[in-house]
Each structure stands twice: as C-alpha cells, then as structure tokens.
Length: 365
Image 1 (cartoon, rainbow, N blue to C red):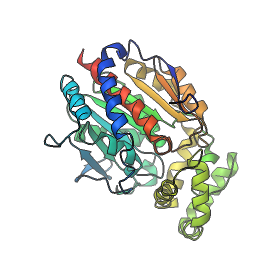
Image 2: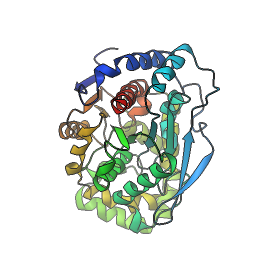
Image 3: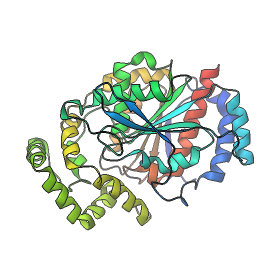
C-alpha cells in the first residue's frame, strides 16, 4: 500500500492496547485481504435485515436494522480464526451512524465486510431514509444524540459498543458524548469519526451537492429560509436538474475518479432527501460548537478518518479532532473526498478492523 494512498498519524498504544491486540489485528488483516472487495459485486441498497422500530423520546419512529452473527454460516479460514479470537473477548456491537441527506445504505461496503464477523447495527436518522419525519423543533444535534442513545438501549442493551459515524453521524456521536459522557469507557468502548467535525463548519459548503450553489455567510441563511417556504418547488428543480446534480455529487462527494455506480447511488440518496428536511437541519450546522466535549473520547480507542480532498468537512476538521482527543489515531486518505467510506472503502474498513479489535481487547483486560 503506497504512502500516497494512506497516511496514519498518532498512536493508539497504551489506551488501545495495540500490542495485546496485535494477534487479532493480524487475523483481521488476513480476513480483509480476502474480503476487501466485499460488496463490490452486491447491488447498492440490497443489504438489509429484518427491521425493528425504535421510538425516539419525542415519538418519531426510527428504522433500525441489526445484522446478527449467523453461527451456522460457513466462514473461510481467516473468518474462523477471527471468530475464535473474538470469542475470547466480550461480544461487541458496532453501531453505524450515517451522514446528512444519506441513509443507512451508505455503509454498503462496511456492512458487506462485517457480515457474520461482527454484530452490527444500522439505522436511518430522523427525517432520513425509512425513519419518520421530525418536526423542525427537534431537527437538531442534541436530539440526534438522544436518538442514538435510544438506538443503543434498544439494539445493544448489553455488552460493549463501538460507534462509527460519518459527517452528521459523527456530529451525532459528539452530541451523545456531550450529553452522556458516562457512557464512554462503560458501554461505549471505541469510536470512529469519519469526515466530520465538532464545530466551525463553512455551512455554504453543505449545500453544494444538494442545490448545488455556493453561498456564504448571512446570504446562505436568508436563501435557505426563503427556499424553505418553497421547498416543493426546490425539490422539483432538483428532479429536473438531475444531470447537473449528478455532476455536482461527483465533484463534491468524491475526490477523484470513481465508478459511475458510486456517483449514481450517492446521488439517489441525496435526491431522496426533501429540501424541507435540509432546511430544517441547516441552521444547526452553523451553530455547532462541541469541541469541548471530545476530550473524553481519549478514554477509549478512537480513530479519526478523512479524505485530504474532502470539500465539505475538510481535513482540517479531522486534524483538529485528532489534536483534541488524546491518543487518537488519524487516517488521512490522500486525494479522497467526503464519501471516503465509499471511495476508499478498503482503507476505511482496514482502519475500523484495528479500532474494533483494539477496543474489544482493551475491554477484556
């Protein structure tokens, strides 16, 4: 693997117990070498399990799917080895939290890679995907953090949990941490923050793949308020301008050339999110300021991941998170864009391998 594709900064020795986890990590790497292309031959949006409904504290129904480990599943040799190592540690559940204007299907490659290796939970955030619509009052990060707490309580009521969030999903995790810091090191034993931040966003960038138009400062908020009143007209424009929107998705979601199917699937998710939902959440991106809350994550294994060509939550945000979280690990994927878990899914999944293994091994000591 060339240095031009991957650069890792920081140390997870000590807090992550990397030496103790070394054997398990090597097994995970063997497994990844076999299944690193997992998901590439599976249709996007086709990986699902029987859903459950988790009701948020304000009554909004959240669509949740749990991939249990099938004990009868025929695993390859590397998988069997990993299962034996995993069996010596507490059962872990990995909860994946998607980003703004996406849905749980954005974790396609990670879901394919971890099936029958790790218990995983995926859910659609409120007003996204198959979950219920939120009113405007509850379309904010603190509510998203409480939603995540509900999902953990319902889908992973026992045992250690690793949280992985992309973009708004990472901000959701930070909101959870701020409101429930006692979970870190108790229930939550590891955290992955992908293409995200805890504040200081250039909110004009957030509209680029959705409208697409570049606005800044007060003009952005006035424009969004105005467009909110005509959200059905905006949605009609977005449908009519699909070709232009697809080009924008390619430019702002990815850092370099990717298969056309990646672009089309990302655009489908973005286009399925009504502009009214975008406008409801939009003001809270500008006011997000939670860097003070992230230091507590130094108590557990934490990986920060971002593409160096991320045009929405730029690499500087991830570097700041890394600097504020003691003993965290920073993976910079050179040339990758905002949807790094698609564009560099092999690197992201390999980093998550180390995170999950280190978290469970540290927990078992």
